[in-house]
Length: 350
Length: 85
View 1: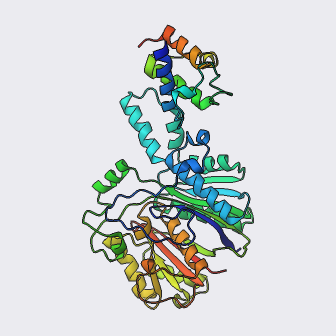
View 2: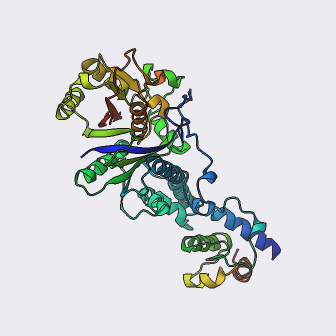
View 3: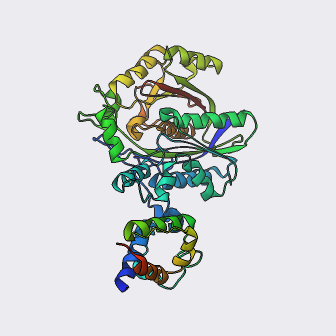
């Protein structure tokens, strides 16, 4: 069963919302960065928006943008992934519990604190009554949402779906992760992130919505050919080799390999090893120097890869070596989160 | 009473996140639910929390909210007659 990317919407730390293709990058030299948000008032009814957290606003706006981009009126399913849901409202709810001695708890903050509110609020806003699910699986939440969607397509249960990855990085959560060494301490420039030789990543946040369909049209971005989720693989190079073999491909059939390098020397060395063992003659690229690291950043990778395939253009600021791709037929997206959860996503031209 | 009405409107705008609305935009006699501000059942819960937190009034019978939240004037009158702080 072929699954095509028909529409996309992206709010990120770059100027990605409603942009055509990959815009000129915004570079950063600090580890804590927030999204470049559109003016929510232009896209949401104020009465509807008043009970939405910022994350929900971003999710609904990108969902609507991707649906509009796809030309599909209403998806058969809405499936989201999130690491922490509306953590900003969760923090408000918990802070209020502490300050008010566990009394006077506000229902709105509580509602936002349940992670599965994301897909449901998108559905309420769109008036979509189809299959609805939110995956909360840490650093592989987006890929889990994508995996379920692929299975629903394979079982002929759906003909279209809205899949998203949504996460926000609050100051308090950033600080907590900073204390356990998640983020860069040394000065850095995001355009040089893949060359970093220090530990810690650049944080990020984002909202990526993708409309998938079993049919394509002239505007279709790409086909999602295959997806593998791996937990702490013994030998990732072998796993990739197997993945390619199962899809009747050799490493030389991959035109571009896109990696989730986040600037953390320890985690990025895994990608460099994969490159040297399997893709030394292949065009190599990265995306997290544009998105930052967060639980569902793989969604940004899919957004970027889909744009590369449709435009048949690899921007120099995502390229890691001097090999210019001869074709844009097969792009392999490799991502891992803290060297535990790995995902392999094969996107192809259609 | 005028001070309480203004205070109440300001608190409602803050608690219910009625962005872009000013106290003067809320008609003191218009219904808060359905028509008027168009509030719903979750807003009613928020207002019950506000009553207890700001004025020490614990609403034992949530059904009474329908009467109390009839309009800003009715709401303010109920608070002034029952407030404990």
